[in-house]
Amino acid sequence: MKLQAVKGTHDILPDQQAAWARLERAVASVLGRGGARRLSTPVFEYSEVFAKSVGESADLVVQKEMYTFEDRGGRSLTLRPEFTAGVLRAFIEHGMYTLPSPVKLWSSGPLFRAENVQRGRFRQFHQVNLEIIGLPQALADAESIALLYGVLEACGLTSHHVRLGSVGDPEDRAAYNAYLREALAPRSAELTPTSQERLRLNPMRVLDSKDAGDQALLDGLKRPLDMVGAAARAHFEQVQAYLGDWDIPFEIDPAIVRGLDYYRRTAFESHYSGIGAQSALGGGGRYDGLIESLGGPALPGVGWALGIERVLDAMAEEGVRADEAPRPALFLVPMDDAAVSEVAALAARLRRRWHVEYAYVRRNPGKGLRDADRSGARFAGLRGERERAHGTIQLKQLDSGDQREVAEDDLVSTLLAALA
Ligand code: AMP
Image 1 (cartoon, rainbow, N blue to C red):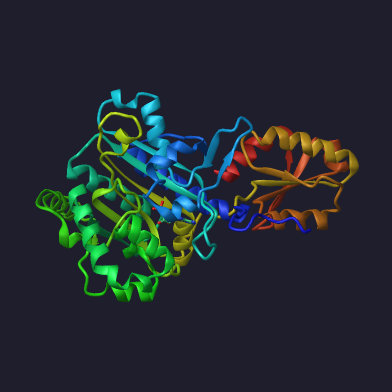
Image 2: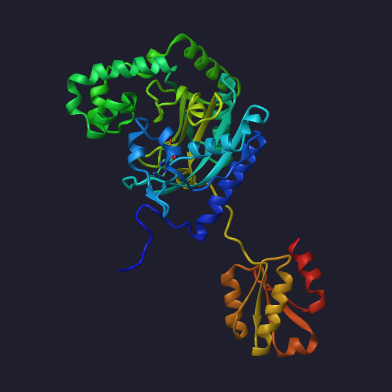
């Protein structure tokens, strides 16, 4: 059997790392400036942690997609399929509810879902996640959306857009779910099996179906936003007013829903057209009640998760330039056997300051300079018998071809001046 990566997982190759690094810098700086602090949680948790949030009736699809296994002590463990549950578990476990409110936490790392693999849908993928805990006001919803927008902007994206909706308060949600169940009941057999299951356990989620037949059955039916009560509507309008004030563009999407039962009021997604059917870069919403149900105090929260692979896909689509591959400052060429350990020692010294590479075996000057060129280095340094006798290096600037002999002791100052 030929060994290869597990289906739905992928290697992040050296050439892709610059784009990742750019995204990570954008995230750390935008979220940091917004007052969020980073929290890292383990990639697996006791399965109960997820049972309360993604499990039960909440999101059937995710529930089925969880990688759950027993450890040697017979405890059920699950590889995290999302961040929120683990982040809130840590928030409660470490008593972070005693910190000044709001508490803003961001996380980043791999998640695992046994999905049907396609473009933008993997079994190990990565997200950036933000939670703002403690504020019931619309200001928190708006700020969380603004931070999502800010991250995407800092990644160099220009044509992403926010879709904003509201699923209302729990009673509005319940009323809408009852309405949809009744409206679809006569033709429920025509829905896809997933939608039938959703209709039974969490009807609102039928709206998320990408199936044209399902969507045709939904034609002409009310959307969650049509049934939002007065309090949730006022909250929704406030969120819009803040976003308007801050020049964050958004469009209202009356059909937007979030998978988990605990979501209430604000729901939003960020989309990018041009990366295929899976155009959602990220999504989030308000989840008042979830912290309490996980055994913590009754604190409200709002948050989002952003799919890193999809953002990178959008960055590539938009031609965002990540940093170039790193170029060595100097490539050392040993021209005889004795010079190999000499250039290695020199490299070890110079690497305190610069990216330095060298040939590990004796090279003639022609081949050595070709190696140096291929490495992308700014300078080549040649060392052979003659240079040993003089205590020097032949330093060649590779773009201009200028060459001069530099005493070993002057190498640092020469390079400092040349590379400034
Ligand atoms: P969710 O946690 O399902 O709300 O997803 C939030 C974001 O994570 C989505 O908008 C996607 O960008 C990304 N995402 C979710 N599932 C996957 C997956 N299986 N593969 C890649 N990205 C995903």
